[in-house]
Image 1 (cartoon, each protein chain N blue to C red):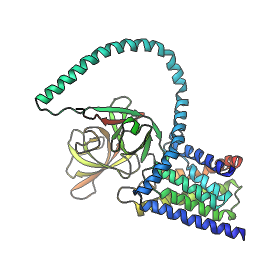
Image 2: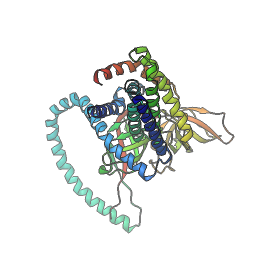
Image 3: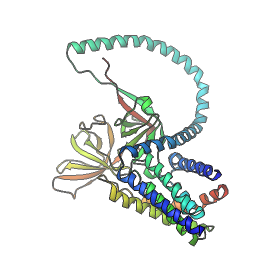
Image 4: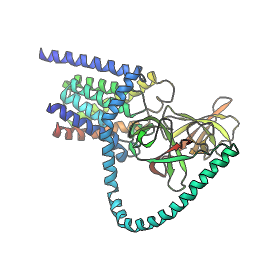
Length: 279
Length: 158
């Protein structure tokens, strides 16, 4: 009797959980669901974020001890450099004022500066390795949705496109990678000016679509961000063409490209934040 | 009360194993699905009630961190927890081979369920294409092989 009652209770709980689950799927972006999402995120993220910090710091412990030995000498050197830079900064402020006055006088558009914010990757789930990641910088650091995220090449010093911020929280942000199944962005073949689209499909490859049929695209051609992109800066490196498929429609052909951001990079995310215009 | 606290601790531990440690310990992005192993373990030992509830919460957490369909993993882990719990009487839970086979079977259920729901609910994108790859197949085997070790550790704790 007791067993039957327990079984009935389990069935009811199962039905309720399924109902809640499916209502989340169907009303994925409505306000109550977003409230639940944000609440659970703030409950779950701190432990994961803290654990990541601990693992990272443990890994860096030996390096840190080594670095501490050299710290004192470096400190003295940097003090000297600091003095010199302060003098230069005074000159820089004067130059900025002069630049603003002149550009206003000549009615020229001002150059927009971009601030680079370095962030650690705090969560990256191996089953969805090419879909998303979470970084340890958020609203408090001036980040907001739709900002481009890049990674730095270890040897070339170039910035590689990685993804864009899709959700921003107080001290963390979720990044949808360019290889995300839902990501499509305009690219071009470097030095050839061929505009096409790059689609992600959850692997380290991108599907390059809408390449004009007559276009001269070959393996090893570099893919860069096109000027049509509203997220990334024009010319930012994306990947390299691996295969070109000829058997497509009459107008366009398709290719696959390997993304750069997985090879030979410094494992830190760089967020490019456009500097706000000050009056 | 003691039971709830131990479940909260296990929830945190498995969140850390899946989301935080995975970044450091994966080999070519291949990493066992610890959450699935935990849900199957609970289903076998504690029955459908605990397994479906913990499965729902862990799935929901995964959904919140990911950019996929919100609620999909919560539903899948709930279903897995429920059916493992219902079928638990038919298995000899103590045998390593049986544990591996059950986890292997439900790993397949997990991936088939994910791709099926992705196909139905995903509007646009290349979602279904990326789900069945060689690495996923290897992951299923790795998850099944590592399951008895996790079961053994959990037996000591729970």
